[in-house]
Length: 562
Image (tube, rainbow, N blue to C red; front, top):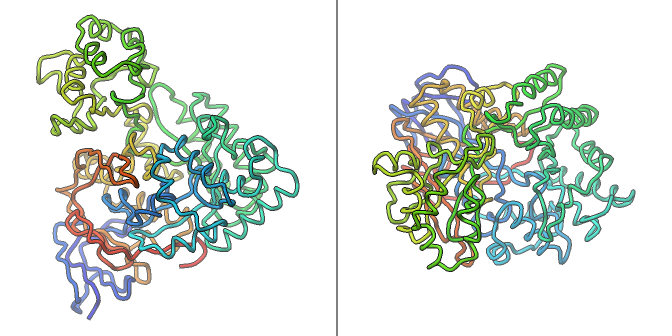
């Protein structure tokens, strides 16, 4: 008798090959049989009408801090994710020198919008090295499997102290960084992650430590990653200059070739206002044809910015709205109410001259309600829809809703990755990797971690934009192979039993909520998913009919062994 048998489901095994109806048997946390299973199971699930897939792998999270107080893996677990990757873009909580914890947490607050008030309470810093942090995670009751990069800014600060914020590493410091990185890789880290992103600044407003590294330092650290993956948030990401972006990534490609490593860089997006992606995609194909493995990270969902009206946000930076809203966030609540109700203010906002190339240009067909406390049914709907249904101008609909919600309205504004045909080309390219979910970060700004449910529900089931076998491979074996997670991402005997049972007709995104479950009661946005009959991590059921079971069978993964 098997521990578990999933029966009569459409088995989409992660290989990209056509699915077939069959059974999957599990013993001891591993898959033992796929196809027709005669023996009974102590636990059986009739998966008729459902997809049986590998558990999803989210290659871009910032859960490094959150797993210390909430090891469940939320919010990824609400979307079929069974393995997450930490340490992206060079940010994390380890390594950390004695007394360095405040600096690392303040940087996370500024760059990744993870509130210091929560992390100061929730992150114990019982470690100094990355190896120590891995050991700490191993003692947690993890709801997901966890793999981690060694974050460059943390590594640099651990070795150089305050010098990391402003100085070039000397020979001894560089040797110490390389030695610490090698120790972490031996301890199971999957690779090295860094950033040159111009928007990445620390709690003092200066460049994060990784941005102070010269090319010699970066290349030396990449050189320690033979056979592994490294990741970089690129400097030219918002430049709109295809030549500059290709030249930058071309330099990293040379380092990758000499190191015998693999490279993934972020972010890569398709946008109508900066159509540079076809050139970059073509050059990336050439690098891969030459034997390199370079995988820009992409996502099927728009990259969004959250407008809020009770605290500082980009609301007053909307093109053409600045005169009408000047000084808005410094006013009293009563004066804000008076201003948003003023017909002259609204007339000025309505008359704003469009700036189509500006990502904040009002596009009411794309601006959606994330949170509307007085009318929760608006979540996910556009301002244009509300305006048409109520016979009002979209500006009036927005201002009326803000007032009805006592300023607690939240509006999702797509600012990047808005060219849907281009996005489809990006995610289906054989040399990209799907991710950019950012779970654990931007806690009051984005819910991009929803991408697995969106991809399967909208683009596969409802719109038929790509076949199920292709989509599942993008979420499973493709990131597993790139990151060196050798026993994940495929349904085949011997692999870990990370599995999903999905009812396609029920796939949907829940409305966005504001929940106060961070340490100290700090808020975050949360968006769940529907359609997940069951999710298994290492053979144990962690989700049953879209609800967490409370089981925590996750483990810390390494890139060099099952």
